[in-house]
Image (cartoon, rainbow over all chains, first blue to last red; front, side):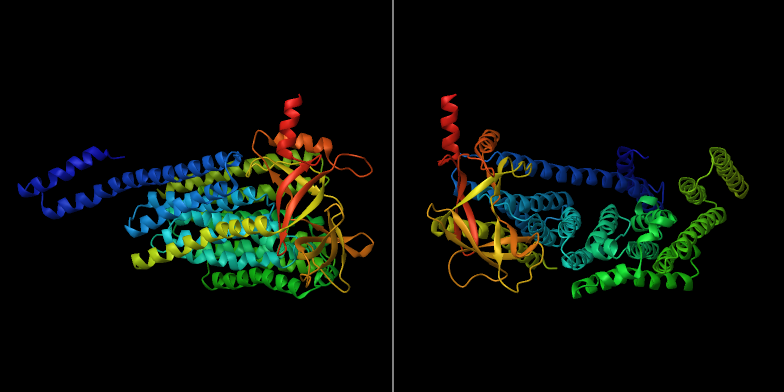
Length: 440
Length: 193
C-alpha cells in the first residue's frame, strides 16, 4: 500500500520535474494515473467510513429519541406529546429538503439524513399510537412505514431506506401470511424497489452500494416469496418447485449480469442462488420429504380465485427459471446449465411424487447431486481453481453424509467411507496444486 | 432530474409522510372531544411492548356478537359491530357485519372467526387493547390491574375502560379500577402503604 503523503509529495514535484525536463509530460500523466488510483482507493475507504458513521449517528440519535419518548412523560399534555411525536420526522424532513435545496452531493449527509427520516416515520406513527392508546395492527403499521420510506431512497439517492424497505415488506408479508392472497402484494411492493436497484447498479454494479442492496434483496426475496405463497408452498406442498425456480432465477440472473465480479462477495445473487439450490437438492434427496405431495393436496386447496392467483404467481418462478436455463444451454455455459437444472429437476420430482413415486424423486436428486458435485469438480480442474474443486468435493461429501443419516449402515461402513472421502479431498487438492505449479 | 423538481417532489413526499401521524392526531383528538362515552369491561392478559414503552395490556370480556344472516367473513377481515349501552353505561354488542349499520354507534373490529359449533356468532378483537403509562408507573398499574381484574365466576372489583366512540373508531379516555382512574388509584394506594 502506498503512503498517501508520499503520493501527494510526488504530485507536487511532477510539474517541476516536467519543467526541468527530468521526465516527459506523458510520463508525468502516467504517474498521476497510476498513483491517483491508490490515493482514490484510500479516500474511498475514508468516505465509506464517514458514510457508515453518519448512518450509525442517525440510528443512535433516533434510537435515543425512541427511548426518551417511550418513557411516556405524564407531565406533558396529550397535544404536547403528540407534537413531540412528529417533531423528529419534521426535523429530518427539513434537513432532507435543505440538502436538496443547496444540491449537496455528499453521500454521508444523504445517507445520514435518509436513515434518520426513515426511522422517524416509524417512530412518529408508533408514538402517536402510544399517545392515544391504540394497539393497531402490526401489518398495517409495517406497510405504512415501508411505503412512506421508499420515496426517500429515490429522492435522496440513499441505500439505507431501500434496505429497510426490503426488510419491511418481507416482515409485512410474514404478518399477513395467514390471510390467503393478501401476501401476494409482496411482489408488486418488491417491484417498486427494483428500479432503485437497477438505478444504483447502473454506474458500477460491483460497487459496495449495489452489492449490499443485492445481498439484502436476494436474502429477503427467499423468505418473502415463501411467506407470500405460503398456501401454495405449505398446503399444496409445491415448495420444492417454487424454491427450485426461485434459486435458479437468482443464480442465472446473477450469472448473466454479475459474472465479472472480482470477489465472491460481489456475487450476491449467484451465492444465494447456488447455496439455496444445493441446500434444496440435499433436502429433496430424502424420500420422506416428498411423501406429502399429491394431486388431492393441489386441487382440494384451489378453493377461491385468490388461491388460483397465488398459484399463478408461484408458477412464474419455475417458468422464468426454465427460460433462463434454455438461454444458458444456447450459450453452452455448462456450469450454469448444471446448477440451473435444479428447477427442472424439482418439477420432474414433484410430478413423480404426485403419482406416489417419491422414491424416484429422491433417487433423481441423489443422482443430480452426484452429477453436480462431479461437474463442479471437473470445472474446477479445468479452470485450475482450488475453491471450485473443494466446492464440488463438499457437495459430494454433504450428499454422502445425508445418506448416512438416511440409511441404516453400520459404523464400520460409515467410518471407512469417511476416510475414503477424506483421502479423496487431499488427493484432489494435491493433484490440482501440482497442475497449477506445472502450468505456472 | 432537475434539483428544483427533486426538491419539490421531496417536499411533497415529506408532507405525505407528516400527514399520516398528523391525520391520526386530528382524528383521535376529534373522537376524544366529540365521541360518545362507553364503558368496556376488561379481563387481564400479559403485557410488554419494548418499542412503545410499558403499557397495561387490556383484554375484553365477551367479545362475541351475532353475525348478520348470510354473511361470510374472512379471518382478520375488518368488520363492524353495533353498540348500545346498558343501564350502567357499559357497552353491549349488537349485530356484526361487513358493512357499518345504518344508524347508531358502531365499532370497526377485527373478525377472528365463529364461536365453535355456533356459526351464527362471531368472535372479534377490539382495536384499543393497550393502555400506555409512564415507565415507572406501568408495572405498578399492571400489578393493581391483575389484582382487581374481572375474572369469570369471581366477585372482583370492576376494572373497565372509558372509550369515546365516533364513526366506527374508539379511543380510550382512561382505565378505571374500583371506579377510580388508574393514576388516582395508584396514588391513593401508594399513600396508604
